[in-house]
Length: 140
Image (cartoon, rainbow, N blue to C red; front, side, top):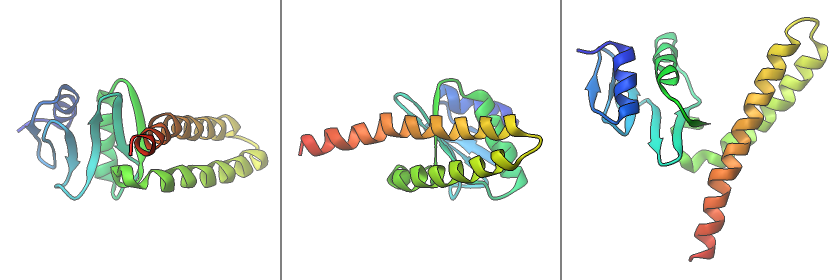
């Protein structure tokens, strides 16, 4: 049985592997069974699950994020059909973080980094998914 970090690197290489509470089928990597997908391979990079349910799942996500190199889009439940919802939630979170940043005496840089990250996520969503939707509608 592999260590969690080994499972994460196997996922990046597209190889099946199993750890004690984490495994990959080569295309997806899971935490505690098939009900929680941490990330999926895409031709341009990875889709990463924005949700987290426990500290151990958060650790599993950390191993995968450390193993990944390339573009990553975080989506709710790692589900591409929820792209618009993720985009809207990111906008709400940005608005909330801007308020926190404006009132903060310390951690202003932390809030700015979080805001920049969410803006980058939304930019990737626009580039990847909205473009795909337009192409799909044009080719119908």
